[in-house]
Length: 221
Image (cartoon, rainbow, N blue to C red; front, side):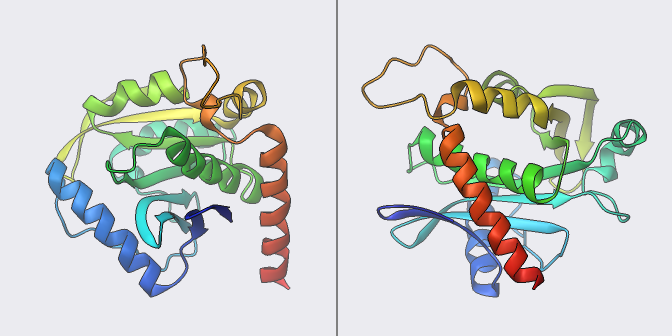
């Protein structure tokens, strides 16, 4: 879906791709003390994106689309999620987000997150993204991407660690992309301190949306 020289981002829809993503997740999560037995499954309501550099998986992010069976976050935060569902929200959750720290590129990280936004908003018509994060990561998501805290700190049994539920409305994300997307260049001074200047520009975003919509139509056909 995205290719820049040796770097690319693609939809992971094969056992080999899911295994590579699982290896990165287990490596990064074990280092943080979150366990090392995390696996990706072939779930029709879950989409996994992987970022590769010279053929090696360096980043991954999964998108869970709300359905009658719910989201993973319902295990801990069902009351908070149901409140938004009852107000008409179409929720999705971003999970299993990991990026190899040796790849020190804000642009690469932003590209992966932006593609996940496009999948959620433009392919699956979601209105809000929710994430469960460790307290030490909360400030990053709030400051850099505009997430807001929902409810109180709880224990997430899947990783045996405390977690906050954070949410961001996709209308807000869209506004930030329209205003700041693609404004970062190596020779420019970025005054906006969020992550959005490192996202694709609105023009690049539109091209990606059209490409993904064509792929989706071909899959349906």
